[in-house]
Length: 232
Image (spheres, rainbow, N blue to C red):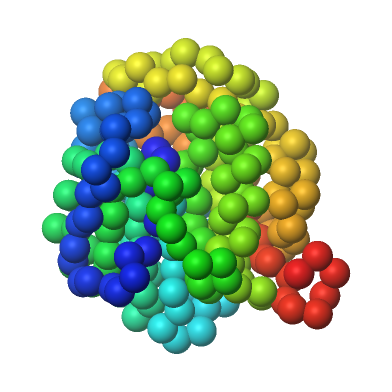
């Protein structure tokens, strides 16, 4: 679910860019709230958010890339008093998120096409948002997101760590094309982009959906080095 900040924050607002809707949006338009229900039981995701919350200063600005229905990521962060911008390519997901999390801002767009100032976010969340991009696109996007972070800012990333490229699959009954990296290669990718990996957690999770199967999940908890340190 590729899921970027308007110049000013508007609470409970969904903004749709006038662009051709990416192909990846179709599956998530179809899933809608079903996706949220299927993944609501992920304790690893909740722990990842707790890790991030423990490191954010009050009123931090957070970018949620692939924000889906707004739950649990945007909702958890907004409820804690942070300024959240969620970006997703699925208009159905964005409408749901704006309704469910009125204290955050959501935009329907491809994050790569949203003009955002470098160093303008305290944290970036990328939960399962890269899987419909090819490997070069994933590398380029992570580098772009690192530039959006303030020095010392945090990036949390989750994916399905498999050595697959351009594989046609069925996800909760919807056709998708999936590309990913094994754990070691993904870790190298984020480090090459200028991040340090502070912690990681791997788990197996079965979405609560009749057509779902157990899948490996990997959560990387990263930081852009503070100013004045190498690679900052």
